[in-house]
Image (spheres, rainbow, N blue to C red):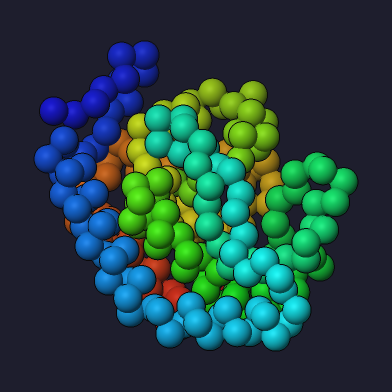
Length: 210
């Protein structure tokens, strides 16, 4: 049975059976990814330690499935005082808060690898809208309250918006990303997820920035 919004007629493109299969695929894929990428985890750990980074794993609260908060995991790419004034700040393409190793990890998307654990635990999926902080969600909802529909899905490691909208460093790009994510919700399928994952891997292997 598909979940339908009575308010706007926005429906989930996946049936309950497809969502169960998607979750099963996430678990298997995340487990395999953690095993295969273990040497990469070790190498990144060594590089960050050599750079003088004490806290290798960066944890930050995000809002996910059903509007529940969780801690997203990343390899630390920024200086510890990147938000020293306490004000949340969007990451930019050429952010001067990035460390040398951190910049390399960002460019090659290696900083996202610890999120395989988030996928394993059910906080995230391989494909879905990128999870955002409450501060920025509140700003987006003032412009478009439809953001709440994204809570019908687990947030993801990648998405069409991630691939084709790039860094969301402005409100305009945040609103474009929202429309793309809402479109994904209504039309998503297992085959679409496979294509998005494949395109993501191709982009990474080709070194394309997104």
